[in-house]
Length: 68
Image (cartoon, rainbow, N blue to C red; front, side):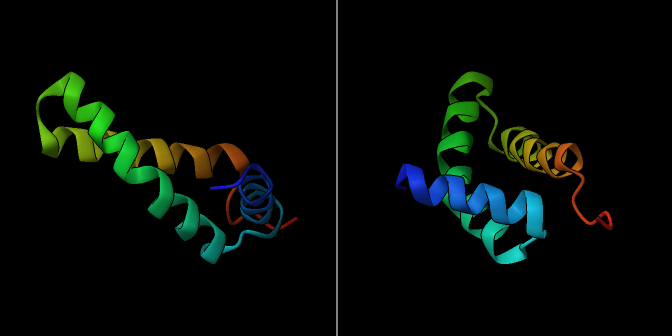
């Protein structure tokens, strides 16, 4: 993913609550984060839950869905 595209998608998620942009970020980063977590935890199910939690915490951090 190009740096400019990453910045654009992050802005779309943070400022516009764009589900499409979030989906693109999720699809791009989830596999790598899952692989990293699996190497450490040696448990795919737990790794998936943790990585999904990271994305949920990201949405909470940026105030996803709040009226601006």
